[in-house]
Amino acid sequence: MNRIVKKVTLLLVVCLFSVSLGSCALFRASRSFIKTMDKILYRPEPGPYTPFTPVTFELEGIDQPEHAWTYHWPEDYDKTLEATTAPQVDIQGNVYFIGRNYYFYALNSSGERLWGKKNYFQRTFAICDEGVIAESMSGLRLLDLKGQTKSICPRGTSDFYLAPDGFIVGEVLTGLVSYDAKGKLRWYLPFNEDQYDYLHLEGYFSDTQSNGYYVFSASIPETPEMKKNMQWESHTLIMSVSSDGKLRWKKVLSTKRQFLEEFLPTKESLVKDTFLLAFHQAEQEEPPEEMTQEWYESSWGRWYDAKGVNPKTIKAFNTDGEELWQVEETRLGLHGLDYAIDQENNFYFAYNEQDASTPYWELISGHLMMVSKEGKLLWSKAMEGQFETAPLLDKNNHIYIGLQTKDSNLFAFYPDGSEKWRMKVDVLYHYLHSLSFGPKRSLYFTSRLQSLLFCVRERE
Image (tube, rainbow, N blue to C red; front, side, top):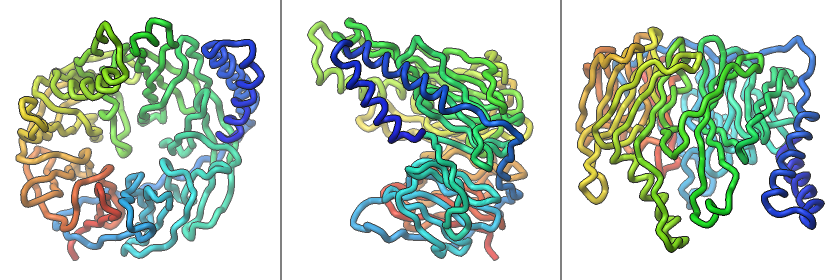
């Protein structure tokens, strides 16, 4: 059942109940109806199941970098288009991304356009050896290297990814679902969280056993007091789900707006036995006696600013959800980037220290750090510049990262934190999304306020 059908069904339910129910009761009745419908519609199909083949290639590093090419996408060039997604690369070196003009692009390894498709879902897609998995209004599609549809699964999700074991996992209105390469529904895990009005998926990652970890913001049902004070409460939850759709565990991470959802493992990083989550100490501001809409709207900005001027706590958890240790970050700034994990489960992350006493929080310095899985700081490197991308590791744990300084904007470091090289990629304004590896020692990335995609690779 796709999103359009669900919206029509929900509207029908609203009309049927609107005469006799209040708004809160109506919302809960509608939600209950949709849950019942989803339990019927998302009935798992019998196996066997066929996985997709995730793209794998050796993550070779770059020793002598050069700017190989830049691609400009041309449609609607009177607008700032940017890219909606980070680039993804297949085994042949073809590059895929989605622009804010709703075009889905494919380039060859030389930066030449292979095709552009419009009206595909603009947030998520996945690359596999079989082709490109994308979402359209009619459901999930598998495209070939020419952009032609190979097969259609007439069901979709609001967000999906390709798990390490080759199966699709995604979110629907009332739970999580998983499909195989033939479009079969493997499992449906409903959200049995009746104490919340709804759950919204904020992020996800996987471990080496293909267990998934899903972070949700959860809305508390509105009370008259909450409505009067314009103080709606939200929790942050995490659920761990096995590859075959069984709930392993779940826990509440925060009952305030304190969780930093930007600090999660990168898409290249699989958790072995330990992962990190970050929190700040900013509290929700108490409302004044005379509530105004202006105060409510401005409170969000003040709360966001407070995230940067409060100490941060990074907590480590094992794959059973048990807290292991924590470290404090007392310098002011934001943990606004994902972190990388190496084969020994060491963690690499960047932190931009800022001066909260200045009007625009001027940068003091960027810090790149390596922490062991036991919580020991192995090294920390301060840089006179701002980190803009998460660390990306090659097979030798050399680190590649976007860092804006006066003369350079792309850096590589050795595993001990010493600098390997730096370069200036001309025309690049600021990074948007993460760096992506390709085969044959290549890196790809996009930029803010520009309709550009860049390729840097080993100098021939």
